[in-house]
Structures are given as C-alpha cells and as structure tokens.
Length: 409
Image (cartoon, rainbow, N blue to C red; front, side, top):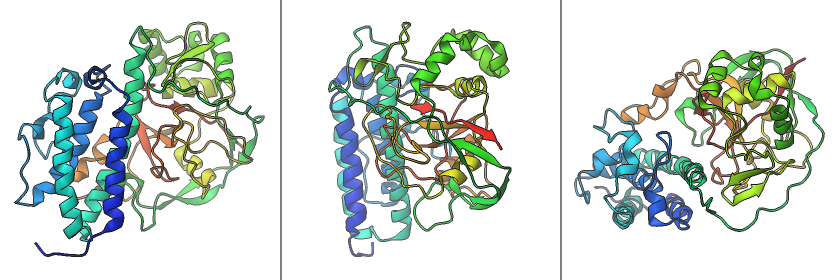
C-alpha cells in the first residue's frame, strides 16, 4: 500500500458523523434499541450496525489485511445490495436480539479503528475519498431515520415515553400566506457543481416551467385542523383514488400522532399541545395532495420548488419539532419539514447510476415513489441542499413530511 499524506478534514468528518449516531441512541434503553415498530422502520441497533457494515463492505473489504469480527454480519446488516450478497429480511430486523447492543458498539469500534488507519494513509486517494464521503452522507440519512423510527416506536407504547424530555421552545406566529412567483420559461435544475451530491441529483438539465407561484410558507397545523373539522378525511372528491382507498383501509381520520381531541399530539418530547403556528408534519403524499386540493391549490412540482428556492441559504435546525420561520420571502424551505411535491421519483434525462454495487443506492428505487424537497427538523446539519431529492412511497407518513402550496399564474 502506498503511504500518502493524511486527510485531516475527512478524518474529522468521519469521527464527527460516527459520534453523532452514538449521541442519538444514548437516551434509549437497550430494549428501545432492538424493537422494530413496523416493516418500514428499523431498530436503532440495526441502524448502528448497518451504517458500520457500509464502511466495512465498501471501503475496508478492499484491503486484504482487514478482518471482520463476524462474517455473519455481511448478511444481517446488508440492507438491499443484491450484488453484494444475501440480506436478512427487512421486516424481521426487530427479531435480531443477538448480536447484543454491546456487540454492535464493539463492531463500530473495530471498524472505526480500521477506518482511521485507512484514512490516515489513503485518505487523499480518490476512490477512498468518494466512497467515504458517500458513506458519511448515508449515515446522516440513517441518523434522521433513527429519530423518525424512534418516534414511531415510542408512540406505540401506552406509557407515551419521551425521547427528549425538555420542552420545545415557543413558536412564532406564521405570517399571512403570501405568494411568490417562481422563475418560469426554460430553467436549469439539478446539480452541476464539484461538491458531493447523490447520483440522482444529476445531471443538471433544462426544463420548461409555465408561470406559477409558490406559497411563502408551509401549511400549518391550524390549517390542517380546519381540513379535518371540515370533513376532509370523509370527502372522497378531495382525494386521489389510491389515497382514498388507502385512507379508508387504514381508517385515517387525522394526521399521524395527533390525538382524537385535535389539540394534542405525540412528539419526541412526549405528548404536547399542538402548536397551531408550526408547519404540519407526518402527512402522507395522499393527505398533502388532498389538503392542497381542499385549499383550492396544488402541490408544486420538484422543478418548480427547486427553481423557486434557488440559492436560498440552507437553515440547519435539529430541534426535534417543526418551527415556523418568521423571515421574509420563501420560508421554511429547509429545517422544518420535508415537502411533498407532485413529481414522481424518476431519473433525470441522462442519469447514470454509480458504477458497481453502489449503483444500487438510488436508481433501482425509481418507481412508485414521490419526491420530497427541502429538509426537516431532524435532518443533520450540513446534509440538506436545494438539489436534494428525497423520496418515499405516497402512503408514508412517519417522516417529518408536510406541504407547501403552489398555483398556476
């Protein structure tokens, strides 16, 4: 192995991101960390192990001197990489009582020590740099998932336990709804820079947008309550057919985590009064689309959203609850809720997935999912950007997902 100069920035970033994952699980009991609340969620222990497996599989495995602490981890903690090998069934991750949480912490320390050696000697080599940078972004995605999965798990507990007992700060009243005309005609969207982005954000390309306007803020809890009390969940004409069928089958009557009184909801801070001024969260695409139609408007396309946001500074929050943003102009683009768009998750023209097994990261999920833009109150600082394309199935509602209105001009 050729010895090269250390890459201090990458080593520092690696240490910081890995430490943050441990901070997020610190408030949990060992029992909290092993339980899986639904097939779409994963236990906190599995998140810790899978993000470690990523570095072991895609970085360390290339070095003949590396030895895994347990070959079985290759199957247990592989998420969906078919080209790498078999995977333990996703819906049964909560049954993995062994290895223990302590053994997972030992696994992380083992991999971190090996990674530190690799970064010290090969940290400026392009293949290592690219894969480690992707791995850190991947772990940040799982940090957000850890919090949303923990919230869903604790909500199912009749004791309604708190993840973070300290009360959230008071929210500022939102401004009246303002409409901002977005760029139209031929505009460019997507990434064309030299910094890190996921492959699904590229290539930058031209789209044509008809004149439109986008709401200056997100839809609030108070406005969603009005939708509920106006019979929004009982009026089929407001809903897409698939959404109406899904809502009826699941007996949706209000947003996820809201109590029947429509005045309280469950959060990472435990049961709290619903903040009328805060952006509404935990809405599926189906609900967001119905609410937009009830308002007499629509959801923006992802191209409209990106063009309207432009080079707006990214706001980093991480305060565990959505907050109203009192600034002028386009508000709450980042740091409150992911925002559903009207766009299906598809490849950009000219899209090419990354070569090798890592090409499975995004491209193979480009079917039956919808795009969300922005970031949420639990998105790690430094992770969001205007070109970021998040995606979930249209029925998903356990994420911090809300909506921004749009209209034609």
